[in-house]
Image 1 (cartoon, one colour):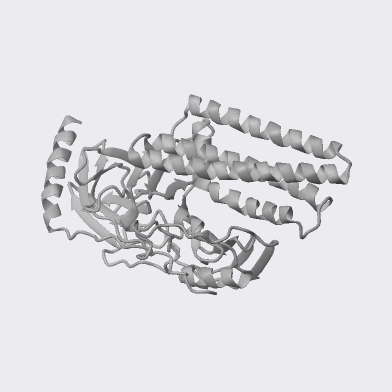
Image 2: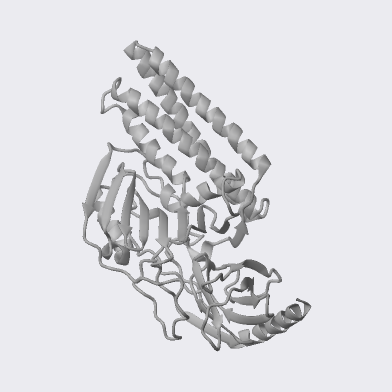
Length: 460
């Protein structure tokens, strides 16, 4: 293995020299208007209207199937139908981008469990008091007090999230601690959502539908959903020791926004929250607005849609689109009619391959399909002579970094899906080593620009 280490060091140096002829990639903005200097909230009202439901469907438009066990594709392969359009943070305002691994954290799990138990007990006590209170006026007063308390708790969660982002951006806490904090906020928001259910059930039999408390509970239901997400849930499970493997998570932040991505069961999972678009919103979004915003923001996904469902208030609406490649959940804010939050689950089996780059060395041939920072990166290694897949250990080193981290093995099919790093716009070096033979192949590449959500400023 010493010979392998020396060879890798030489190849890394060679890759560094080669970088001089690699053009740099200028990152694209997903919203040029939302720069740090203008990223300020407006003073629009923050109220909600009764629940709105939208449901429609259309036949699928087809998709591109990519087999994981195929031989390396030719060098001129092209990107398939782009159902990989994503919501992004404003590029010029991104403070931190990195990938971290989340592991069992006994202290974090204990603290989270204590908070969860306390929240559950509070909800159970409220349910008991509601069941024991028969007087209509007393019951209404109890619902109003509990709703005010729930509103305060929701605002406190928003503040906790803001403090966590600020602490991470300043370097006060690391990526793993930041993710643990977000996971705890996620869990608390989910439990407070249960409390909304309890209060809404009681309000239906106690208050009029036009009562402001009823509308406020609807608003709180969808505001609490802005704190939860599948990546945060995965982090929470890992911290509690409930996952088989320690997930790798990509993290990017602005002063009020967060992007998290990971890979789970051969699925790319992504959640993005743009706080500025939430804060600058108000009321006034309708079901038809939501359909138009989603269709305009995600045209390729919309054209391939299989089923759509939507639910929300006129302050915040959640629209879900299933398509051959996976699922999109777009959160649209009232007044500004912008997608301020998205959740995507994309199957890697159908994921459109990005632009390819190939290198052959020491009898191995590596093919990399590039992607944007935090996106799903496909790495395939075969024997250069036979074309048979080779099981190699893969590591990635951002240019300018000494952090050479193993990210996984290509396995028996010679393919590894991992997350593309985003800490260096200069690119990164991918190294694949076959331990049994000491064969090594090294490839220098760079991230692509993401295909971002179209601007949805205009009314429906």
